[in-house]
Image (cartoon, rainbow, N blue to C red; front, side):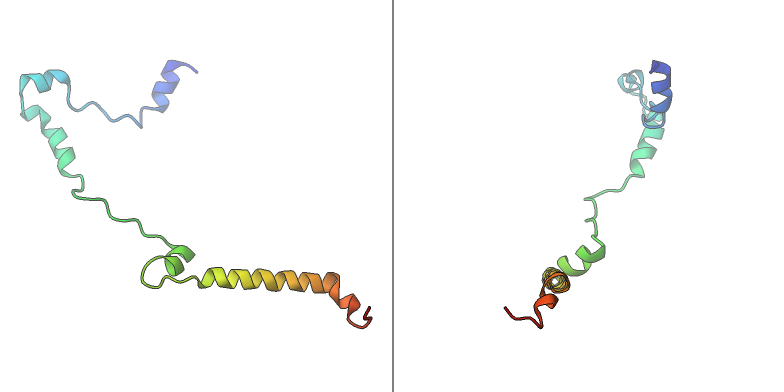
Length: 98
């Protein structure tokens, strides 16, 4: 890839240069107004905790936490396995005891 192509693709990711070293060393506060304006609009304080959704948020997190989905999944797998065993093997021995 050419350097200009990479520079063009990454142009949207790299923020524009607001403060240059010459402005900072000269001590001109008026030229830093865009930078101060940008940082004043950022949220302050700790980031909010992310909320989990779906089954995890409904059954495993918060005040309604329980293990019922795990228990239901275990019984459902047992029931499915027994049904498959019955259809494949056990129903053929139902009337023919050996």
